[in-house]
Image (cartoon, rainbow, N blue to C red; front, side, top):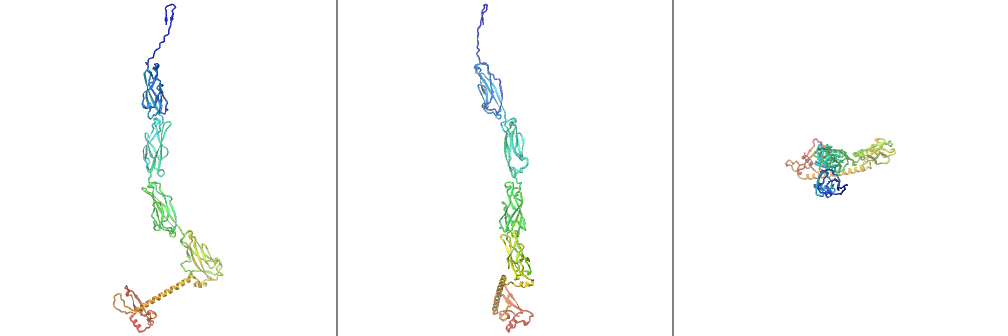
Amino acid sequence: MASDGGQPKRTGTAVIKIEVQDVNDNYPIFSQDTYRISLREDTPIGSVVLYLNASDKDDGSNAEIAYSFSHISENARQTFTMDSQTGVIRTKANLDFESTPGYKISVEAKDGGGLVAKCSIVVQIVDVNDNAPEILIASLSTPIPEDSVPGTLVALINVKDLDSGKNGEVTCHLTEVFPLKLIQSSNNYYKLVTTNYLDREKNSTYNITLLAEDEGYPSMTTMSTIYLCVLDVNDNMPVFDKPVYISYIAEHTPAGTSVLNINASDLDSNENARVIYSIISTNIDNIPVSSYVSINSMTGVIYAQRSFDYEQLREFQFQVMAKDNGSPSLSSNATVKICIIDKNDNIPKILYPSSDTDESALFEFIPHTAEKGYLVTKVIAVDADSGHNAWLSYHLLQLPEPSLFTIGLHTGEIKIGKDLQDIDSLRQKIVVLVKDNGVPSLSATATLNLLVGKNFQQVVPEIRRQPANSDTSSNVTFYLVIAIAFISILFIMIVLIVIVFKCRKNSSPTSLGTLGRNVYPQFTLGCPSEISDTSLPFPFSYDVCVTLDSKQNEIAYLKPVQNVPTENLIDTDDSHSENVAQVS
């Protein structure tokens, strides 16, 4: 403003605008020297971490700020990114608390005049339950014997979780009920021990599932399986399919025939389950059982050692033993019963009438007054077989008249079929057939002679008289005549030979002397013509002496019988009398 000195005073104004030119005399200023930020480790990639805002009192280009990392680790550089113009920091990779729980970054803000301001950013990663527990088998004992005492250590287990806090606190347990349990021994270590004796026959292997679970939210779990094998111990004896075996074998079956196959099983394994069969030594009717049967020690097949006869041995039993190959070995016994099945190999035996008696000597007396139904006799027969093979039936095989007699099919009773008044013949012959019920059927016959009369005295002559038309009697008579004729001719020939021989000896000179102890006084008989009846006189007896030397065999010493009447002597001529005197 300008004023003059006059009255009135007059003034004049003018406006002066002064523009102050900025000088870069101010540093950029951060709102904080240190920024502390917490980020969950599950923060998505590209999320804003921080908005940096530095101020500068300068103007113009002196107030333009550029942001940059001044000091940053390589790990952080790969994890975070920052906009240099706006100062916005974002994530460019996944965060992992377990690998890097936090970051410390230095950031600088530079204005256009080159003045720089710095600040620190501390990024704390907040743990998230993103890691499942880990199960590590530190040691494992497999296979384990089934007779291990309760409390035996099976495995040592280590569990851990990379998370922290509650997220890293882990508990471990079994998912199923086993004869085992987990015992926590120290921090993150568990022992797997047995709670009872194991039974390999019930469970030879165990698939033990372990479940590890942390306490985070939501909780994370991990499962791991331990394969445990149970080692067999010989604690089971062989067991037969049944305690008693019964086998049926037909009689006369050839020796070596397979009779029965027994089987015993052992719940153990390998050598402990290998069964060896044997027959327990015993006697059957004082005969070792090994003479009757044998057994294959590996297969258990029983073989017959002989051919059995039902009529001699109908059944027998013995004990077999099954023994395993364990140590110590275990065994069990079973009873084997062998039953012999009868075959129709015996013909019926007729007890009456006996086959040992002459048929012509067997007679049955029938009164002439006997009426229809009169019991004449009964044929009795037995069969050594049994069952159907021993069922006997009786049949009339040969009859004078078909209706004259009847026989009970199963009783063998012979009865009169009609009245006997019209019968002319006193002698009646019938043949009875006894047949069993076997297949094929076997049979025997019996012959009966029946005599019909008013009384027994009437039939006695008939008994004494042999039937003229009997073929058997005729054959016997014929053979008897032939035998007698043959014996007579043979006797006559021998006598003639002896007489001729003696005649020749009589014609040779005789001498008496001392010829040793084997020489006897010799006496030569005369020819048969010189002695009556071609034999020595009655009063003489003779001995035949035979020496070891065939040349010295002689007939010696005829000795007279004392006190024999002389009228019994045979008269001869003088020469013969002299010979007799010499003999005396």
